[in-house]
Amino acid sequence: MYRYLGLETFTGAELDRVYDDIRRAGAEEEREREDEAAGSGRPPGGGDDGGGAAGGTSSTLSQRDVEAYLRRRIELLDDDDDDDDDDDDDFGGEGGGGHREARIGQHAADEAVLLLGHFREEGDMIPAGPDRIAFRRRLTELASAVDGRSMLPLSVSMLLVGMSVGVVAPVMPFVVENLGISPGQYGMVVGSFALAKIAGNVPSAILVERHGRRPYLIHSLWLVGLGVGGIGLATHWGHLAGCRLLTGLGVAALSTAATMTAADLSTPLNRASTMAPMMSAFAAGTALGPALGGVLADRLGVSETFFAVGGAYVALTFVNRALLAETRPASMSFPWNGKGKGKGKGKGKGKGKGKGKGKGKGKGKKNGGPTMAQAARNALSQWRPLMEDSRVRNTVTMNGLYWFALAGSQMTILPLMLTDPMGLALTATAVGNTYMGMSLVQVAGTPLMARLVDGVGKPVAIVCGTSLIASSMIALPFCTDVYGLGGALAVWSLGSSVLATAPVSYVSEVVSEAERAQALALLRTVGDVGFLLGAAGIGAVADLAGLDTAMHAGAGALLTATGWFAIRRVVGRAQREQRQ
Image (cartoon, rainbow, N blue to C red; front, side, top):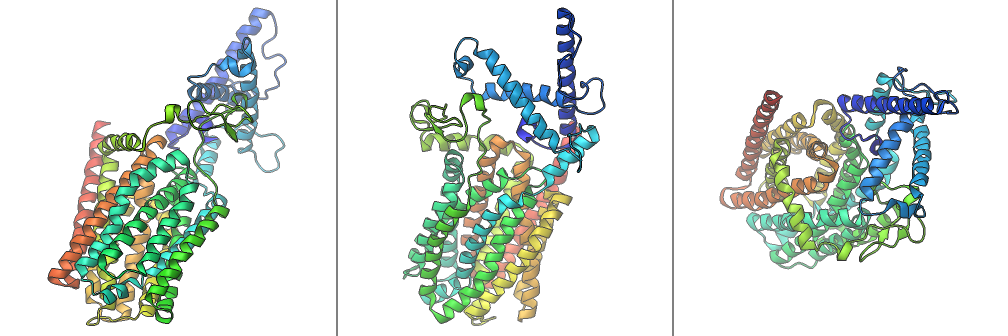
């Protein structure tokens, strides 16, 4: 419906423009009908049962208005989708154009009934045409509602992924201890994960756009399972780094596919709220997983725990295959040109996809299509214009600095602080319970924070979230018991709840649909660069100055980044207002 109406931003101005376009289309068609009737001697409007007055004489939209607008939109969309094709060929050659117009008219009439049905009041037998206020209100309501039924399978999948991740979290510090790895070396192990994601983000974005979301929500888990299971066989920190590289490639594909799936199912008005169930499910899994991981490590052993988790990822591929459906937006296609559902014969090499049975027109790659290297260069060439938008540039940079601090502090230093024999000296089970507590706060906080993010605005939410995390980093080295530790980590988790949706949803809404895949790939890649540098850099600081100093270094970096982002936000807004 939104694509038929040409809606993208769902602002009040855009909704008013579409409303006016619908009324204008109805008025123009009514004038054409009157002119034709005057020329033929027939009374105007005779024999037309479209219902309602034309756009120029009524304060509400009639079915005739909507049909007129949709006819024009369908003709435009069909022409864009069929630039290289001869329309008459679709309708039996000569004279096919009239048949096409009739089919378009019937399709527009059917879609108009469906569209007006959204404005039907309970008990009404015939859809009532909305006025301007009702049109804006109802479309805003529809665009703000979260499609929970479509997000449920993905949320279940992310719950299971989160459980597998959570199982590993409390066990890794004991791998470090068993292998005698220094904080700096462990930082390089953590950073190798980010290096793999940097290498995998752009190809993943290309492949997810080319082949769809579902294949990569399934097959990426094979890589993750092999990487995690391999840790159980590691005898050197280099082996760990290799396993983390393999895991990072799998996670790059998985996160790209999951994020694009959520973006497909949302609008700018509900993007953060749509992503929240997926993030909450992942957080719930990571809440349950650590407690299980701690028990498994204490009962089965460290290596056996990694073998079990690797097998769980492989088993999850079959769960995703059963639960998940493809959400990639199809090109606008219509019954009369044989495109859409099912498979048809594509032009050039490769199979195309079509709605019609048999020889529908496909969109296979002509002459084999671009190579991966060409596609990667094309994708990277899109990043420069994206970075020219200050909103994208500032958010991407802030995300990179956030991950610099987070990778160094939470991913590298925090596990070592929790198990430090000279400090808290927690057991595997206690570490598992600690991570479980953090995840429970995120489970409860993510839906609430998502509504806050949508309400106060994404940039403001980013500043609030990073400030909460930085304050927790500062307090953590001063915690000497589990109560102080619990309070600091609870605040940390609330900040993480905000950052789980705010940057992604903000970048998704300030770029066009065509740019979204590469904008999100850019966001992830810069975040991974920060992850790589933060894990290695702050790990090196820990080698030189100790764990507490390294944690405070991460806090200082994050506070500096937050102040810069807030200033750039104020300056950028002032510049845009001045240009207007």
